[in-house]
Image (cartoon, rainbow, N blue to C red; front, side, top):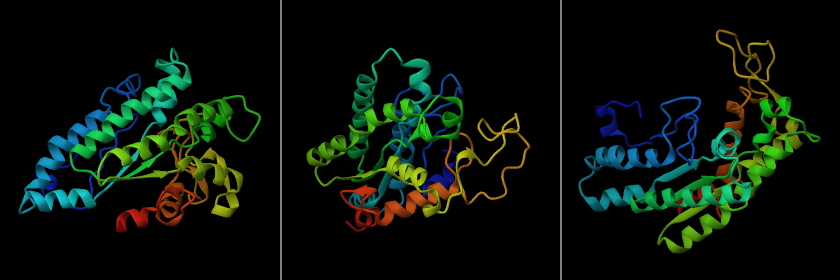
Length: 267
């Protein structure tokens, strides 16, 4: 989004439309920031900016369509919808109805991407947000994570596989694979050492109270051992956790189905 027009016209390796605090619904992040780009707007940017600029790099429309059809569209969204946005703006909805609303809105955007030329999708479910340091340390819970939050996440996650299966059935030549980030978190929380982690309940950065459970304080050095902490701050996973996701997406059929990311790339 911050690329110059010149850079946008020569981009051939990837574009990221992620926007902090955004989500499926337009309500996300409005109470925290003003300039939040929701999923629909991100698809608009892909249509009006990326496609417009990329077309000029190809000799004909056929080659451009083939390029888009071979590209991987990675989508990881929904956490903000189910966490802060639900708790502050959308509690009028029973959680099962709210999850259905999110799936309906999400389906519309996935179909828009398909109509624009996307064919290969890696779509993640929502992580176990009840296991975030903020939630672990500010909510009542009997297990290692805040169960009420994770139960809410599960209402959405259980609907996602059937959505992706249905879209692949109805959209010719499409391939949708499901990335189970929730299970990645479950595995790490259950057996941290197995995945190289020593700390899964506090963040690497220090908050204004000198603890490691809230928003990072400015101008304070984070922890020295960043490789063995699962969370960098009280809400966001560390680089090591992201690396673990990628590694398991590539080859682990228990995390990516009906095929792994490598198989999707080769399909």
